[in-house]
Length: 252
Image (cartoon, rainbow, N blue to C red; front, side):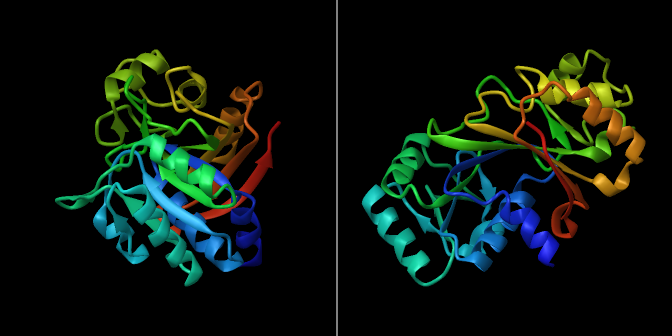
């Protein structure tokens, strides 16, 4: 538990953290909320896309677009020792996005808050390539965490596990149905229209499924990233509720 806390705490900091990609974004967000609560770091959760209402109900969100009312509600939540959450509204089973300008404004008023933004949608797939309209990242973002699931290594490029399959195949320069190699996944991570498209601030690569792939294959993946400008690469066992960080590599 102490080692896990140390690893997760290394990702906790004041400012806006945008979480993009696929294969564990909401897991990373939820874990950051959990460990921030243990050290008393003031935390606000929001999104520029959509999240399932069931995923955020625990945080008793404020719904609405009035900035002053939202700021008051979030501040009160933190005074009670809770995580704050702010979304525009509820649409069916999902909560809807805020404009990035509103998130930037909240950061300007409360620069000491950790503001976690799920900024990308992936329909619960393992990897994705963004469309030209996504992700939506606030301009004041200080850290972008890009998530990929290493279980894609050795797995075929199909719609079962890949969001925006055609775009992913084009970036990887392989046909749909090809088996994903270390170099192919690295190409998706590094490509200008890949995982970190539109990213702001420092970049952290967060890899789930570390325990599901032979480490020689993962080492080849890391070698292919050797010239990349990440501040950190995180390798985590498991996926969703079972996610635990196994290694944190200070990259550059």
